[in-house]
Image 1 (cartoon, rainbow, N blue to C red):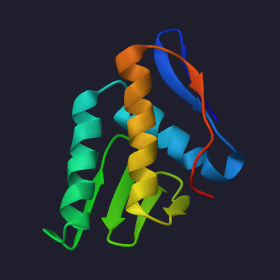
Image 2 (image 1 turned 45 degrees about the vertical axis):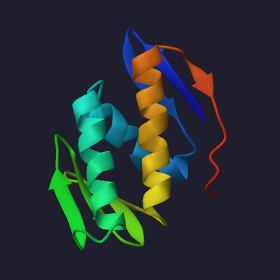
Image 3 (image 1 turned 135 degrees about the vertical axis):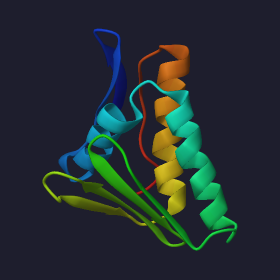
Image 4 (image 1 turned 90 degrees about the vertical axis):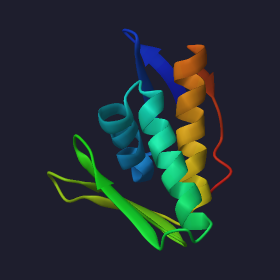
Length: 113
């Protein structure tokens, strides 16, 4: 997959089955480190059992974080993607953070299948 900037905006080229991750990052997380930290902190709280689950709706997506999965749902089309772990969701957020903080484009393989 390829993380890159287009006209100064972060983008992610990803296989079709993970397209909702790309759309979520572009439309809800955008270039905001605040948003990344909000989601990463929520992941930590669920993973540590501080809370049972977390959900929130942004510009276009609802995110539900549970101990064993993360669901990304488009609030308009109701398309859903289920990631098999919190770690996978965190991995995408950290790659996005890398792109927006460094401004350097990169290609990387996901360690999750």
